[in-house]
Image (cartoon, chains in turn orange, purple):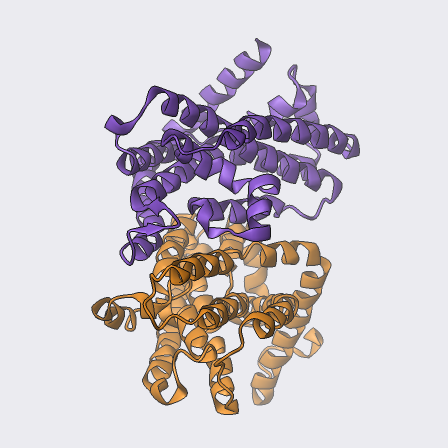
Length: 279
Length: 258
């Protein structure tokens, strides 16, 4: 497949990129399968939604969530939160930091596609594997314990799928941007960790946004955190009907574009420095 | 005595390394304070809705989060730097050098590296405990139980880590297993009321989060049952013994790099 990737092969350059991306995807998938034990450990380490579910159920049962409290809504919300996090999560900033440190990044830069494509296809494969392992059991739990009030319209589920993809893209470009900052500072994971700490609290991952006071909520709806995980959860759990979601969905794609652009800028500037070291 | 001198020497080396990057100390303090803030946010999100959940008041819950932060500091300052290094050494085969040192391999491996700045968490955690349970309400008995149980919690956490690292001797590829411990330990920031039924048994006996963080606070407030007091004293020792056994078995699987 890679043999076809002759630079300057202009007429089919899109199919070339796709071909190379597919090759990376296969490599990524195989490495996910080879390290399946490790991948499974990562899935099992995603405990937060379950702990938060138990916590909010306990608070709800004791009347802390008002009279409108319905147990199955919270079960739906957090089981879906677990699935969406598996699907829309990527930790590629760590990988980049490692590759910058070890110098492996220069090998990657030699590959015949844009750096983003090569990382994205590997990460996408990893994400597929993680989803394959984690989503079916979560779905069984969902149908067993909750399930009530889930949206039935195929359009809503289509919106969930695109919104999950957008969430993944935002997280991916964010990771690329912060990860590539390591080209300037040698180490950028602290920045990422800070982001994640805020993300946990403000994205709807641990605390559904409906539980925030309205004034805070209207601010949170403008910040990018919700669009990394919260919006697809709200759609899929039925907390946000599709009719009311259009502006949020468009804002989400706007964030995709913004983060892609910022990642590209950091990449451009960073690679110049990287070359200056003599890579 | 050798062990003590060994620990002192490796602490000195780590301190010197850390001092080289002393500018990082400020950053570290700021980051840790920030974490404490974000970690407390869900707690206040719960307790601004109700004054009490299953008999737990906000102060007690903050104190539990404080104990959690202290244990986390202990883990990040001492346990994880040393034991993560072991995983690396096993993969490279350089663990030979640890085995050659004139101290017990477990001790040598567990005290080989420190991250002194992470001890900031101990201070932050202690401040949270004092905020949750003001000092004037402390009793001598309560304080003794608190410190004994805090130490017990540290022992259990260390034992869990040691067992996870031992597993990587046998299954070379599961190098991220310690993160599994970290992720599950994270649930210990909440008081034990979160778990019911089977989960309560699981998190009291098998993965004893309740003993690690809820018991010290309950002990401090004089709210532990006699049976829980006994369990809190016996269980850390059981875990230490178990971890020692697993470690020794795993060591037999180590095939040197040379």
